[in-house]
Length: 153
Image (cartoon, rainbow, N blue to C red; front, side, top):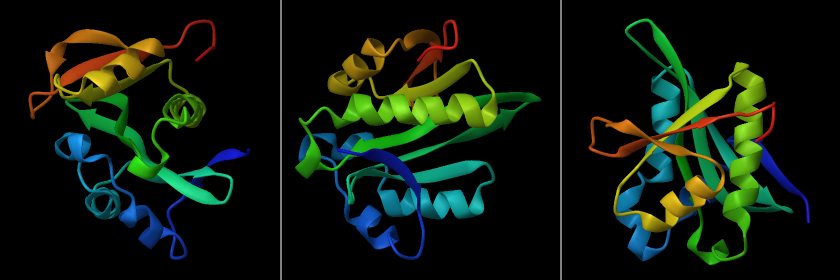
């Protein structure tokens, strides 16, 4: 099966908005519609549809965050629709998104934040090499960092 990342556009935005996390994950991520709107009004964010074959199975949003003269690359949103969970898509698409971010921003570091209670997501992120920092974001989420080693993800 072909796995790819696509832009959000007039033809697919409704399908992306209809994607939902499992009920136990609802409090861990903003609705995709809010993320798409945010990307239109806050500079630097890139929303993405995650395709398994011709079907959209997930959503991600990434970009550069600038604060006090510092620029960091963030994976701000990531979700797999509840109907497509348990099929190994999370790691496949995380690797694809990380590769895209590394190349697009010419970076060796990617940040993300996650609620401490979201144990499943933390396990996936750690399995890909993300390490806990000593910081939290403005919502109290734990901040993780991935430092690419030898050009690998």
